[in-house]
Length: 342
Ligand code: SF4
Image (cartoon, rainbow, N blue to C red):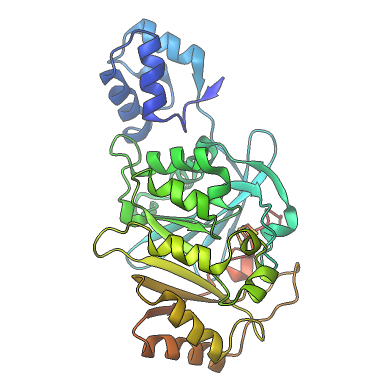
């Protein structure tokens, strides 16, 4: 039976047309499911009995189950979810003054083998379905008091989102659709390691969520080593695609830059980064490396991090040093690997 959570409006319209059911019924079913939280077709009293029965025969409601929950001393919580086939994935809920952000996964593991990333050590086990992607948000909201509900999504947990293209697009469409989860496109951020062909495909989807690029190096020799995807899409090819990326007025691309001591943290790197981003409306997040067992890298000392930031700021970029939220629970950037830590 197909999981209803994750079925797109377009696909449900198609199914209803095959069943000879009026398209406006899609709106009614979505309202029950996403706005009223009803997970039983029998309770959808404005639908005919025969339609309810048919929906019940065709679809189920399946959510990931919470296997473990690890609160961090900084207030964030890492969820270890179990999927129907027993696979495990992780999501991290991070509260702040004006928002509650959830970082979600799109794959069980990842095949892109970035050398600084703990998820890479798993390899790719499988892609998530659209239902499993949005299921993380629904489940965290069910587990969270009204005042702490998720307001922002960052799609930068386990996996390369654009390597799981169709389910990712269906899930993002459900996140921002007024018929479904009703999140503003400004509150959803998709992060990619730079799959250029998929970035080009994604811009035709008219979804207009924020795009973040995990860049992490300014020369191909280094990026080839730490992010092997760079051999397929070298820096110049990636930057060209980003220069052509259609941004709405006032929107910017985010560049994520994991700082690795002695690898990519020199003043020359900062200068090259400033040159690379010239002309692209951008915001830069510097992420001091979060230690984990799968690699020997270290974060640069504080003064190096500040020097890197100061140079970029002197070149009029918005540059933020990202706090290592959840690092004590292995929930910070690059640390997720669906391991039990209890
Ligand atoms: S950093 Fe992202 S793309 Fe690279 S291996 Fe980790 S999860 Fe995959």
